[in-house]
Length: 138
Image 1: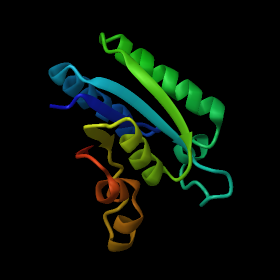
Image 2: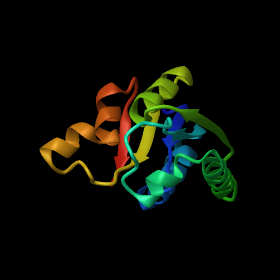
Image 3: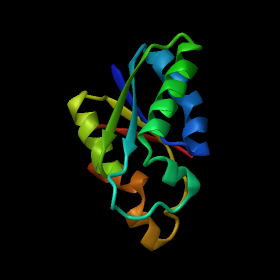
């Protein structure tokens, strides 16, 4: 059913918590797992949190991807990692299209609970732009 699962990550607690769901789904459907991290282009909107600020460092991104790959390897899941630069929501959807993902699984920070925040949240944008189903792990 889900041959290829795309798991966009950052250094948030929500991404770490979503990893358990990703592992269960990948094992259940024997899916190919692709882990994606997006480096925000310099000069974009200033990062709001410390985790967001660290997502602008290529070294931090490389370490994050390696840590995630090792986490899944420890569960017997082989993962491919991809690092891209750009606006997160658009880049996630572009990569999902490129790798022909059947499902995107991502954590949600809950920052878009207001009307203003909902239109700005990465999660909301991915849901609206995605070429495949999106599973949001609260």
